[in-house]
Amino acid sequence: MIQFYFHHTPNPMKVALFLEESGLAYEVVPVDIFKGEQHTTEYRAINPNQKTPAIIDGSNTVFDSNAILLYLGEKTDQFMGNPEERGQLYSWLMFVATGLSPFSGQAVHFQHAAPELPYAINRYRREVERHYGILDERLRNQQYIVSNEYTIVDMAAWGWIDRFPLVLGENALDKFPHLKAWYERVNARKAVERARNVGKDINFKTNFDEETQRSLFPQNYPKAGVQVH
Image (cartoon, rainbow, N blue to C red; front, side):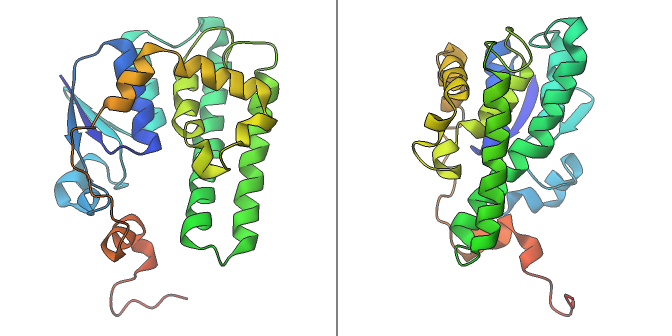
């Protein structure tokens, strides 16, 4: 059985969706990132980058949500699209991994943690809007991101597009009608509801206090005696 190291944030939710879509047996192992559990010695041995998600599948340990999707897709031969479209699948998965996901995260961070920095807020919001625009154009004449077949790329994108109200505002998708239609199409899948319920029975910390800030952004709190230039 797959051990799924989970917190109910966008990147783990991508993997939760795959697991629910595929029917693979898995066990949720909670990692409360608001309490700093991702920084324990035990978890660093699983994910040296000290973030969620990660999985252990027998002798294989995989971290990073997009790497996990690719691993599980290849393992099960599910949601990988047609072989002749594999290049497009890799390309769009990397688009999500290096663009949509991190820029969405930074947009949220600066809007909520550093509202006094309008340049940074504008920079990341505008880049997210650019990514949304690229996806909107891509989806103009097809049902899903790679082709008309639902793949791991749609799961990867869904993880962050699902947080669009937090990233860009409640009505953000109205400017991107093809992306909005795609989002509604994915949300209509039964596995999405099941994925949303993963971890609902876990009492994760919700208070965003100094402990949480130090846990999520330890690089902002250098150890005593360390000079930052």
